[in-house]
Image (cartoon, rainbow, N blue to C red; front, side, top):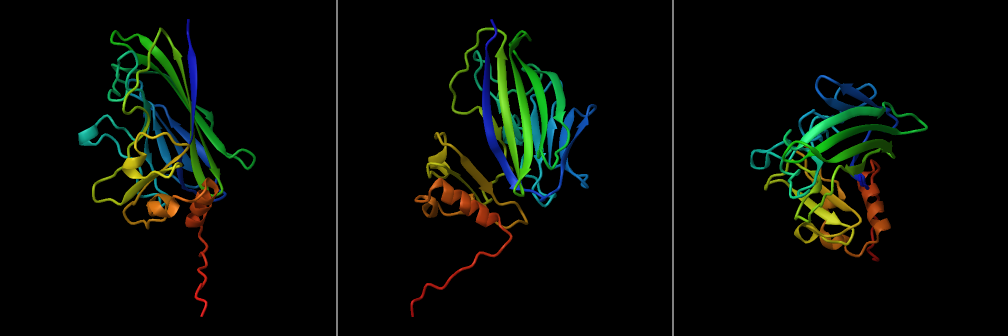
Length: 264
């Protein structure tokens, strides 16, 4: 008997867009990639890699200036971390997080579902389907990732619908990490911060349940303007609405007026 499960992960990536510019997908069968581009631009915003014998992943994801890259692929100290990807750490005691290679992953299909956005539908959409293999090379689980990317209010949003169909009885074990993962090009000397919906920051936010998590870091040559760069104590007493309004103001191109409160 086959059993399926479906998970939704919304708003994984938020980056400044180019207002009013249509998005389109370009699939390269030979390179096993699907790229998201803006009309009139040759450089991709992001690239989905879907090789036949390697875990699917998204890298690179470009910053709004089109030059800097917000993801990192396979650093020497964590070679299994490949940009933005999904990988369970314990499926019947088999590790699909630290093993992206073909002994664990086998592509079934990779396809474009919606190749271009429009004024009435801002989305582009694509899909990958992979078998997660046991030690004998048989499928334990077939996963489907459907990625949707719209542009809304001058912001790009990346949404994932993950579904899995078990080919046999499986147990997904608890572990310190696993599932959705984003590898950023962070180093000790780079300014960065994480902040979640229950007002926890950095180490306090690690492995904590939260409705949303904002993770930001400074990219070389860009000013820090994101919410995650704000002091933790400034945000503790704000409601979610006030936090999202703060994000909008920080991303606004208009100057924010500062009023003199001196009563003299």
